[in-house]
Image (cartoon, rainbow, N blue to C red; front, side):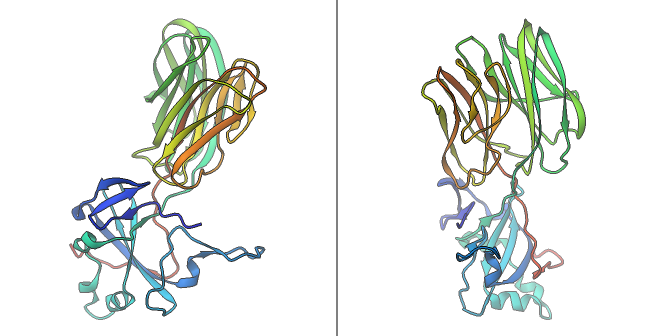
Length: 332
């Protein structure tokens, strides 16, 4: 399936999931160009009997010569934007004085098919729910990944959590919270590029009360906008309670804090990772695919359910190709 993460509109806007964002040519910096056989853009599987799928960076062979040529720019969000260029231009770039034919950012005004490649998110690790009645709770979480990492911690408390730190560094509230049937406050906290290794998480309360804490860390996450969207559902009924959250970028992961009044839930689209007394943490353990409405669900035997969910955005990355040719020097 073709997944165009971002396309450049004729009017000079970046369309992400149908939402327009202004794009300025001066925000773009050309990085390199490459040429690749047309067929290498397909995802092949030697054991498959069906036609291979297009990759997320598929370009048409416009002049029917068996190859495609691509210029790679970086935008202000450090995302790599891919734009097809004429094969003849790519050829001229390799000749004497070919630097004059390098792609220039002022050409970006007319770009209409730019694509942004994104990394694959993966779960790095998680910590089971820890519980105590006190003015704060301290427990250890191990972060093993070093590239494009995100630490998420969930607090479920009987009073307000005034702050959370990891290895002494303050974490940021995700902005979405919910109070369940037992007046427990569910809230997410996040930290990009957390310290590696085993370090302490400290959750502080406004007064002595019961608090439950759990954490999960992920790699391949956007470091500028790690949370794409959020949502919650309160008092959900039925045996497959769910919430819908609209994603604006492809290949997000879903995570959720949950509570069920009847019994501990089991997997739905969410993979239950940590649970204690019908409260816990879950994630989708896989990409949710394209943009649009995403469903986070679990399976229960009955009762009322509560879900507080986030969509994690994947990091933008550059792809490497055997035929890539880096052009030395700036043309700007």
